[in-house]
Each structure stands twice: as structure tokens, then as C-alpha cells.
Amino acid sequence: MPSHRLTRAAVLLAAGTLLFANALSPAHADTNTFGPLPPHNPYAGPDGTSTMHGDTGSSDATPLPGPGTGPLTSRRIALQSACPTILVGSDGYPVALCTPILTRIPTVHLLDPATGNSVARLSLTKGSLLGGVYAYLDDRDRLVAVDGDNTLLRIAHRQKAGGGQELYVDRALSLDTAVPEGDAVTGLAPDWRGRVWFATGGGVVGTADETTGAVRSLALPAGERVENSISTAPAGTAVATTHATYLLTAGADGTPVVSWRRAYDRGPARKPGQLSHGTGSTPTFLGPGDGTDYVAVVDNASPTVNLLVHRTDTGAQVCSVPVLLSGGSGSENSPVGAGRSVFVASTYGYPYPALPENAGDSEPASGDFTGGLSRVDVRAHGSGCDLKWDTVVRSSAVPRLSTADGLIHTIVRGSVLPGSDTTSLLDPYSYIQIDPGTGRVARSTYLGLSSLYDTLQMVGTIAPGGVVYQGTITGVVRIGAR
Image 1 (cartoon, one colour):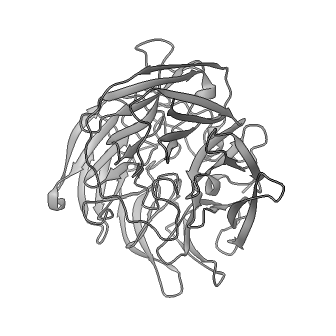
Image 2: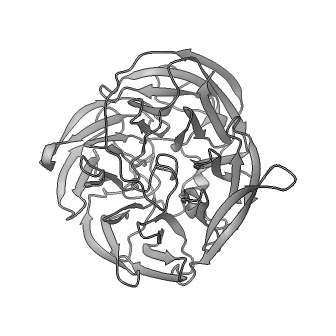
Image 3: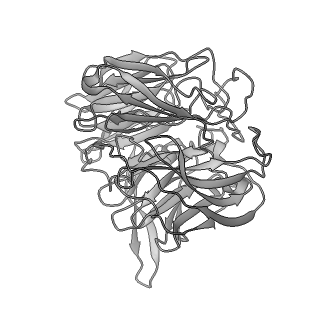
């Protein structure tokens, strides 16, 4: 794919001005018990920090607690890059995959756990940036990503003989035989046999066995694109295209096989605040049994989107529930799932600085960013679902639920005009904690002002020690106890 093409990752680029301050308004929130989370994938890194969405089931939940109840501090690490992926290995080192604003050459940064400063960096081959965005950490703390040459890389770090750290490519495997000319990998995740599953924007799903070098693939129906990442569970791999949700397994030689396909209402067009005409969801595994009983996505129905929950084993629909009723009803984010609870955040009207070239026009052409968050619970025995609450919150990041502290952690975008839904380059940003039992904001900490703090619906990661690493369009914000 030509390096100049605008992709989902390329829209994470912008510029602004800086005014940095910090304020705190502590509050006590109810602690609710959620779970279980999806089982640990033996070929992935620590649960909660090994993938953009926390685990290979894409729960967007973590067993780690966020910052405690005491005073907080925040620090911006300027990397002159959009940093949508920040993962943390078992050794405690955060690894960030970023896209520099000027060169757009994907760059891996190894961060100092104590400060967040970059202590080593490695540039990857430029091309489509989607595979890099959806990288993951393996069980040896290596970053697994696909570069612009369609090469599957395992990037490790080590201490140099003279001191300091370095990043290096420990293993590489070409995926060229499975990725058509002009196409590129959008998402990847390991299965329970150690194979790496991948999907391309053009709708090819494949597996890579690095032990044998075998790469196998399956083309999904023509016209169906994969614009988000994929998720894995012991039962199979979930993929959401711009038309349908799939569960796939692998044949004896590793070739993907469709177990079930369920079409959804993709609406008449892309909505403002979305990057493609279809679901904005990476499929989320959740459930009260082993944490993967169900698969959840959000459709693109108009005027109101629905949370769709399917049984993982059969694909049977458990429910279709209208969500995001209080604000704009559209979402580019993966649902948060834990046990029987699902949380859906609105991105309707979010002002992305650029769009993928195949995004198409939105209907309507524009919209205010009101924000919204809904909670839906699956009934016992999977007999249906119920909307528990629906509220307005201008979340500008993918929320993260901590099952340890019973709080939802996210970043919100304010407005320079109080009470207004308009946005500007001078908007303020705050880190907040939400009580998942009620949807009310329990705590808020001001981070900073201007587009330098724009989190552009990227995901924050909670690291050991209660530290939150949040990517922005210009670097990383590190939030922790004072």
C-alpha cells in the first residue's frame, strides 16, 4: 500500500499549543465486582497490558488497579508522534508504538517505567500503519507487529553492554503470500496454539505459524473490509467486517474456516465521528462462565446504534439493545466487557483531523461531539439484555474498566465554551474515573489544554503500580500517585 495513503492510524496526527496545569477533585466511588475476564492466552503478555484492548479477547478491562485515592500527578512526554498503542510487559517496561507527525514512519519506543521517558527507539518500514497500531506483546515481552513490507516482526529489548537499553528485531516472517498487492494487515492476535492470526483491510483473514513458516489465508466476501482489530479466545477468532461479525477456527493445516457469520445493520452511510461505513468495534469477548461465552459489537444502525451480543459457540443472537441514547448515537470504539456487563462509549461527532481515503461521506456531513456512555447487562442464562444506564460523558479515549478498583478510567474532552458541544484546538482534557454502577463521574483530574493533549479516541493502559499511560496525538501522558 502506498505510504501516502491515509489510514486509521494516519488520522491520529495533528498539532496545537500548550498550557499545562493540574487540578484534583477527589471523590469516593462504589466498588462493583465484574468478571471473570477472558482466560489468559499463554502466547500473550500480561493480562490487561498485552494488547491495545487489554487482552487477546479485547475486553478493554484489566485486573490491575488504577491510581489510588490520594493526590495525583500527570506528566506529558513529548514524542512528536501519535501514540495509539502503549503496552507493558512482565518486566514492567512500557512499549509504545507511535507515528511521528512529520515522517509518519512507525517507531517503537521503550519507556522508562519510572518517568515515561523514551530510553530506546526503533523505526519500522513505512507503509500501512494499521498492523502497527494493533500490535501485541507476546509471552517473552516482545512486540509483535506487521511493518510496511508485510513482514511479521517480533521486536525485543535488552540492556546494552555499555549500559542503556536497545530495541531489536528478534524474529521475522513474510506474509506476502497472503496479503494481496495494495492491501495491508489491519489487526493481529495469537491463538491458543501459538499461531498468529491476522486480518487485512481488504478482507483477508490468515494464520502464520512461525515454527514451520506456513502462512494460510481465507478471503471473506468481496466488498467486506476489516477496519478494526481481531480478537481470540479458546473457541476461535472473532472478526468484524464492515458488513458482519464472524467467528473463525483453523483447519488442520492452519487455513481459516468460518464457524458462523452474522450480518448487522450497517446503516446508510458512515456517521460523523466514525472512520468507516460499518461497525467501529473490535469484537469483545465476555461472559459469566469462562469470560468468552459471548461476542459483542456495536452496529451502525440509523439513527440509533445497537449493542449486539452473540453466543460464541453458535453465533445465536442474545440481544440487540439500542444504546447511546443521551448523546450522539455512533461509536468507533470497541465495547468494554466483563462478566455479564458491557459498556459502550460514543464517538459521534468527534473531530478527527483526517479520514481514511475510503471512508466515504458521512450522514449527516457533521455533528457536535456530545459524548455518551451506556451500560448493558446480559441477563442470567443469556435470555436477553437490559440497558442499565445511559449518560452523557465526553470520553475522548476508549474507556478501561478495572476489576481491581471497580472503576472505569478514561479521558474526557471539555470545551472552551462551558456547556457547549463544539470543539476547538484549545479544548481542555481531564482524566476521570467513573462509577460503573451508576455512570456518574467519581473523580476528575485536569491534564492540560490544547490539541497537544488530544487523545483522539485512543486507549489508555493501566500499568502495575497504578500508573496510567495515555497516548495522545503528540506523545504520552503519564498519570500516577503524587
